[in-house]
Length: 119
Image 1 (cartoon, helix red, strand yellow):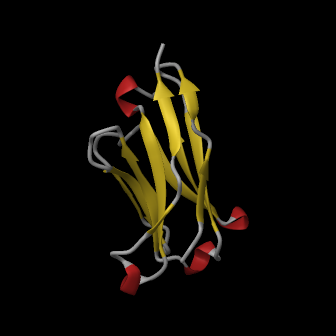
Image 2 (image 1 turned 120 degrees about the horizontal axis):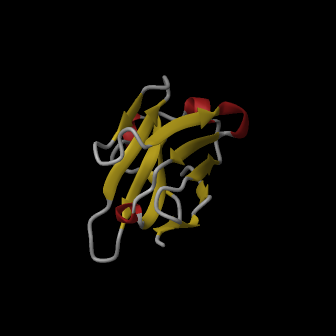
């Protein structure tokens, strides 16, 4: 199982920015796909963004134009850059990694990092 560790959450004012990082225990070049979901208490976990091993990205409509996802191959990590944050972005953000297509339904998850957008 791939180990996944997130960092970078915190409290930010509306309109502010945060950068989340997710490091994996294996070479990121060999990981089929990675990405982010977010969740609030009592609600389903919602897709935010993903990036494939070929660098292709997908962004949820709710954050398109404000969030970007990228890879840092040197640091074996992915980055979620969040700009122009809104109170509705408040959630626990979870990073996931899918090692290969065979394991597409059993991703590895991190412990989550809290993002709070509030004045």
